[in-house]
Image (cartoon, rainbow, N blue to C red; front, side, top):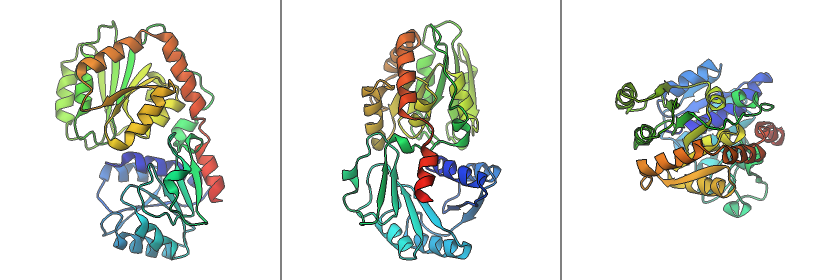
Amino acid sequence: MGTGHVMRCLALAQERHDAGVNATFVMAIEAPALETRLREERMEVVHLSALPGSVDDAIQTRQLAQQRGVQWVVADGYHFGSDYQRIIKDSALRLLFVDDYGHAEQYYADIVLNQNIHAYEDLYVNREPYTRLLLGTDYVLLRREFREWRKWNRKIPKMARKVLVTLGGSDQHNQTLKVMRALQKVDVDDLEAVVVIGASDPHFQELQATIHNSQFAVRLAQNVTDMSDLMAWADIAIAAGGSTAWELAFMGLPSLLLILADNQRSVADRLDSLGVSVNLGSYRKSSSIKIREAVTQLLAAPERRAEMAQQGRGLVDGQGVARVLDSLI
């Protein structure tokens, strides 16, 4: 849970680390797979004994920042509210608050960043006079692995056969299994699929059994660190409507989006209206039949896929991290 929040913070940290600036990740819950990933990126990880987003969390974070002579605190998560921001700011620290839908009652941060296409100023009416807003897809935070594909151009085959399935780090409702069952009914020769799941996905055994009985070539990939390579390999993707949607757009990968949480609805709706993705709707209402039909249609529609790829690359240019860091500096 929350993998996407960590990954976009990692995008900022990577860029600063490459410039010789230290970054510390502060964790208030146990997440061994994410911690391993951060340490592999040579990031420092510190654990707090506090409820995430609580007053105690803010106080401990403030103390840690002051001990280390930190210039900026970056907070990314729906449990960080007004009190958390105020406590950090009362300590004369600078605060970048990464937000998705204006959930806090009041914004005290120096900068509020909302990288979503539906971001608009009215979400942040209750903010301090000094608070700056960075809104929209110009500020999408892509990790280093994606930014290296900036000049790459996707080839669009007449008949698509390679499918990437990625439904987030947790997939509590096991929608991956439903998608895999839908793909088994797709009547396309030489179909291939890579299914990406989180490191601690509770449905691993069931998914593995399904793959063992698959009628076509399919690979289960866990704890992936080369997502950009997989997106370059694939012809289409089936994904959740979270932050992965911006990675898919940047990679020009035509996608079918499932809404797994209410806060993904606006993203999926808007990307569908722009011709970047196909909105499959809520996971509760998207049947295997609906998914199978949508996949079948998109695999056989090269002109539509080409248009979707072009629209996606036009929406996310890969310069978001640089723009955000320019604002911090």
